[in-house]
Structures are given as C-alpha cells and as structure tokens.
Image: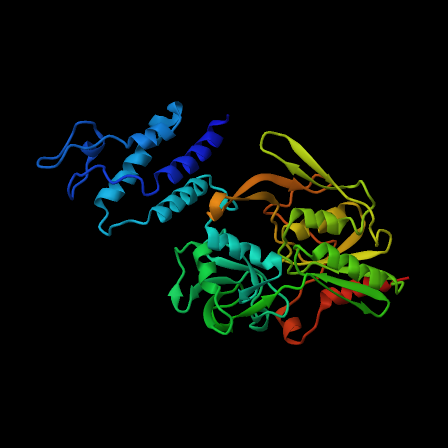
Length: 415
C-alpha cells in the first residue's frame, strides 16, 4: 500500500480510536522544553514523562510509529496542559484531518465537517438559505465566482471577482475563507453586511444583504425571435432532465439557432456536464480526459440521444463560468460545434472526489486528477478564451444592456 495512503488511513483510524480514550500524559509544569520529549527526563519537582499512549502505538503500523510519535506526544500534551479543560476531542480530530490535507498545498483538497459538507451540497440539491452566490474559498479572501440568478446577491450587485474582506464589520484578513463562507450563510430574513474589495474601485465599500431561501433553478429558457435561448445556472441533480424538457419544447418550434448561456455558472457534477454535452454532440465523442498524477488517463465520452446535435450554436461564457461549465464549453469549442462569445472563463480544471466519512463525520475533498478538453487543452488556472471577445461593462449593467447576448443573436441571425 502506498505510504501516503497508509498515512491517511492510519490517521483516520487512530484518531477515531483515541477520541476521548486517554487521560494520562506528559506533565512538565508551565515550561516545556526538549526534555519533555526525551524518555525518563523530567523537570525538577515534576512527574516523569509518560510514554506515548499504548493504544496509539498499537493503532499505528510499525513502519510509521516513529513518524507518528510527535503527533501522539502533542495530543497528550494538549490534554494535560492546555488551560481550558476538557478539550473538545472531536474538534482536535477534525483539525488534525484538516491540517493533514492542507499540508498537501492544493487549494481544492480539504476537509469538510458535517455542516460544511451539508452546506456544500445544498446548492446542487436545489435550495438553501443564504445570499445566493457561488464563491471561491481558495484565496486569501472569500471571493465571489458568480451570483445566482434572482438571488439577494444578484440584487445587491455582487459580481464575479468581488473579494469579501469583512463581514458585519469583522475583518476577514487572515481568516480561513471557508470560515468566512459560513459566516455569510444564515437564516432567511436576517441581514449580513459585506465589505467588498472590487477591482477598478478605489476603496472598499459595504453591501447590506438580507438572506433568503435560495431556490436554484437549473435551467431557464425561451424563444428570442427565431433563436432558442437556454440559460444553465448550475450542473446539479435535476439539470439533465430539465435541459431535455427545455430542448423538447424549444426544438419543436424549429429555431434557426441556439444560445447556451453558461455565464456565472459555477459548475457542479462531472457526470451532469457529460450529460449536458451529450445533448449537443453525437454519441461516442470525447467529452473530456481525466489526467492522473501517475500518467493514467480516463476518457469520458458522450452518451448519445442528443436533441440538438446539428443546430448552429453560440455559447456565452464569462469570468463566472467555471468547472463543469468549462468542460462543456471547451468541448464544444474544440469540435467547432459552437462559437464562444464573452470573456475568458474562470479556470477551474482539476477534479475532486468528495468522499463522505463514516458515521456522518463530514467528508474529504481530494484532488485526484486534472481534466483536459478533447484537444488535450488544460483549463486549470488559465480558463477558456472566447472566439469572439465581448465585454460587459459597468455602464452596460447600469443601462441594462447585454452586448454579449446581442452578439450571440447577431451571429446566429446571419444568413
């Protein structure tokens, strides 16, 4: 077994076995020195330091016992010397897992406690309570990827790239963005004040937002003259079914072209992205590659049965189009199936497994691969470049103009 894998498994097993299991340990008074970690050494007047708890040793494979010795020593020292007793063993256990994953140095590999795991899945399930925005928790500050359509965040004018530097007057500098995200969530009807740092603005400014129950509509659609228009807001549990129903209704009206709007779509499930792409590309085409660290590669292919595989298409993207949105847009661009209009996409091209832990103890999110488009382009941290660059300015927003959509309609209306 790979030593790193054993390291993870042993950590999980030993921490669960030892939660609340021992009360003895090192007692060295107010001063702790190297002597605390040397067998048979004690400060004057202090009891001799005890050995690492036997349960911990037995739970650790022999070839890793020396590696884990500082961990168990630290665990015991905390239980014996920390000023506020008793300590919360569950919090220590979760903190140890969180720190282990953070040590990998990957922004998208992390631990989610039970509440975080529930919150993270809420939007994909279709509803939750908060301000209604997809956010990035991997930078120095909690950063908006995109506001959800018709949400309090959208009504308040939040935009992709907005950094939340304070919440209710509390400075978020140095605060884990995941903790900041949880502060933004809250019961419907309550108010949160966000201090926003926005590119192009001279000074930060406050935005007051009343939280609400957020209903995430996966698919919205209409005919715009003789052009079919579909807006995908997420890649969730019901997206594939909703998209198919929308296409049945729209294609029955014999549209001249189709616009797929992926702007401000922060992504979702990988399988849903393949199902969505399959509506526009013939069966058996490469949807994406998953590239693993050891050189292995998995190939995902389209499923067939698509309802709109021949109609001319334009795909709208912007800085809020991320992850699953980029999988779909990148493949359609590679095949020349659609023209991409807008601005460069977000650039989220790594693949995470969300693995629930036993007994509802949360989940670990582990980056297992990076994905490549059918032409083997990597999108991670680079994004997709549109075929036709069209910006949406502040003046456009204020005047309720949409030049990106207008360009898409223009392209599809040409003879």
